[in-house]
Image (tube, rainbow, N blue to C red):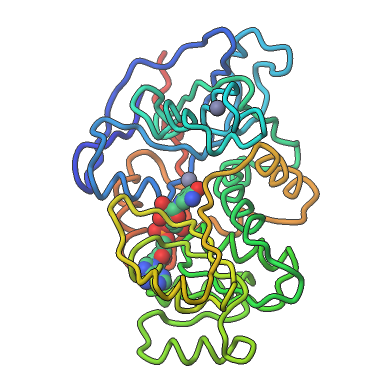
Length: 349
Ligand SMILES: NC(=O)c1ccc[n+]([C@@H]2O[C@H](COP(=O)([O-])OP(=O)(O)OC[C@H]3O[C@@H](n4cnc5c(N)ncnc54)[C@H](O)[C@@H]3O)[C@@H](O)[C@H]2O)c1
Ligand SMILES: [Zn+2]
Ligand SMILES: [Zn+2]
């Protein structure tokens, strides 16, 4: 079966692998749509691990139900790509996102469990979710990143009337801004180094305003938007590098909440003394609880949110390499590209 795999730094190749087959207790899914995520971009840039088939955000059709009573062949589904152990203290208290096993064989993030860019995924039954009839495959493939953003907004402690800042307008930043507003923030602004993405945050209605992170006067412009020029109640860093985190500390008000959503694979350097002097509450946010994933599906079903509007393009496996290049060009407005891995599939006769 055709798939796209990592070959080296910024290099993907079309490969051919044995198709995944069914297994008891697992749901075999033909992938209809799979999203390219900012985390995939880290792997792509580093070219590691070689041979990885990415695609942890997906929707599709069940083709083997592994003996399940709940899922039938033909069902439309999406899934949490993670593998919590369900035995540890964290899992037992519902905190599956911080189980130390959760990423061990995560789909599309580990070599032993190829993701959506391979056309087929095999998922533990308890991680699979039905897609309501009125939720499209495009929306279904975006439940995962939206659940990441919902978690960030949930743990940000945002209160009605708060003024919030989101750093980074990739899909995670855009969706985090969306949920901060849905949860009652009075004002949400976003900073970006890519003007096209910044403008998009306002056009899509998730940010009240955006600011160019490269503007030398950005600090005074941003602080002027906060109460008494004191800083934002909530700052969500959706970038993860030293510059973004340093800015996040600067722009958070004393005793404000700084949520780290962005991830850097290397160590970052930040002026922590400033965070100490302001007694900032810094908290990491990783993935989602099951309830957050399920809430996103409910919000889609009830039309409270629409994720499709964030999707810029749908490509075939042949265009995945070009899509990674487009997403990292720094001057393109695309934030989310979905892959249809089974489009143009050669039908064997
Ligand atoms: N915590 C989690 O569970 C989780 C889940 C998914 C992704 N992530 C991470 O979140 C981050 C964002 O993901 P994404 O898919 O939106 O990625 P992305 O790469 O598409 O978006 C990052 C954006 O940040 C902008 N940027 C870079 N430097 C900046 C700066 N100094 N100030 C303002 N903007 C800046 C870039 O132009 C880009 O638009 C990534 O690091 C990703 O690995 C975390
Ligand atoms: Zn993702
Ligand atoms: Zn566990």
